[in-house]
Amino acid sequence: MPELPEVETFVRGLASAVGRTIASADVPDTRLAVTSEDLAGARIAAILRKGKYIKLNFEDGRKLVIHLRMSGRLRLDCDGDERQYVRLVLHLDDGESIYFVDPRRLGTADVCEDGFHVPLGVDPLDPGFTKEALAALLSRSRAPIKPFLLNQRKIGGMGNIYAAEALWRARIDPRRRANELTGVEVGRLHKAIVEVLTEAIARLGTTLGSSVSDYRPTSGEGGSFRLAVYGREGEPCSRCGEPIERVIQAGRSTCFCPKCQR
Image (cartoon, rainbow, N blue to C red; front, side, top):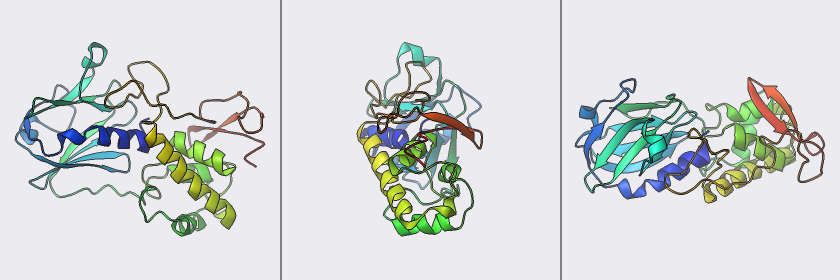
């Protein structure tokens, strides 16, 4: 966490900052690769998502690129519990502030002078992510389908939670090789990926717990996307009643239904 829907939720929640100027900036965590001088006076022309990255495009052509990693979030307010985990604050000229809160301190922030150069694959919510485009990607890989979906150089933005949910909806075993999926299965998977991500964004993502490290939207109580398999090991599948199983793939947990996803 956060994954594509959560990052998109942050971006949409910061819409009021577009057009504003950063009057000043505080960088209490010197491990971040930015300084107050880098940011003060910059006017925000756009706030965009690229995969799991957040880009604040400045009018002078530079970009502040933030990767939230495991526990990062961008807030327009900051309560007492979160304040000790603030790593960056952008004070805007309208009196509003953007707080980069990151309890685990794994996130990054960089000012890019000449564009965004992280190699990412097709965004699953872009028009270019068609059934045919997915089929072409899968045909060239013998990797198990679940780890394949997490490869950011193939599909930029997919993460562990929503890959598991999409595979459950598509009734595909996460251990199947990518290039072994049939045309019908690829069509189901494509549809499931788009549906899961779209629904999760509409519900402001997924909040898994109540600790200070758990995801919260820019404002509000939490995301309300309902998970079918992720984190539900041992619980009955909501579709067939079979207990959900968990395996480890490429160092990550994968939950799936052994009956539905054959």
